[in-house]
Image (cartoon, rainbow, N blue to C red; front, side, top):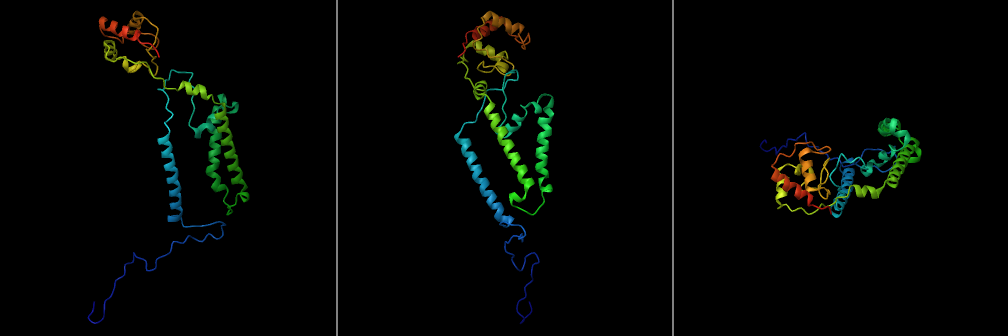
Length: 255
């Protein structure tokens, strides 16, 4: 600052002298409304996403999750069912031309072509038009995809045996177990609880021990010599403990 000359200011090149308004680029050659991507468009997207998120959380709180009993790999009769957004692919694999020897076609080739076409759609349909009836390729392919997914999903739901599926995955409460019984202490100490569960409900590859219909002598024989997938020699306790264990299991009735 020089005496008598007033005050001089030094400008900062990082600050623009003129503030540019939030105006979108000129897309006048494309019909339809245009707006600035940030923050106008993103704010609307965030608000819609927040509404759906709150609704989803409300459904989670209001409805219990559809849990099933513990999975058992030995249950060959179990009918699997994927989540709703995969039902159309699940249904596709039921048809003759997409299952059996043609399983690769139904599982990989057909879905690969469909999703590959969706990825290539922006590169194939590069015209400036936005109206659906002036974009036959994109509109036709999208309608075909929506109709196919809707039909296959409906067919899967219609053909599925919902009553059988509900029964096979239903969680059944086991019998009341007296954990103060001396036989339960032997059951726990001998390692049986690891396979057959704390309530003798069974587990993957291990049957339930409630209501077996076997006598105490038969149970003691199985504990020592094994049966089926259960090998021999697992029980290493005393004869007195074996008697307590076998009598405890034999006395439990199925509910």
